Amino acid sequence: MTILLIWVIAFLLIAYFANKRWDSSVSPGLDKMLPEVLKTQGENRYLWVAALAVMGATTLVRPVDILLVVILLVIIGLIIAKLANWASNKATH
Image (cartoon, rainbow, N blue to C red):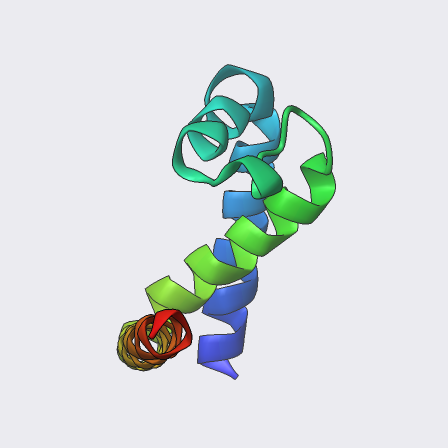
């Protein structure tokens, strides 16, 4: 119950501050990091604030879980990149 309470408090604080600073720092910061397809351009404010709050609160409460998910996603991404590279080499020959 304590972890849930800490997570909810972290979620609310992150969501509040991200929403408060959306125009000044959060939206431009996201636009610098994201590819063109995912850029916010000020739209989808509440969706991005909720996603950032969930990720931030989970990272604060369960950092090892987030680290393992990131490692898993990197491994999957590398495998997909290698397979795509292999397939494109096969297609040109």
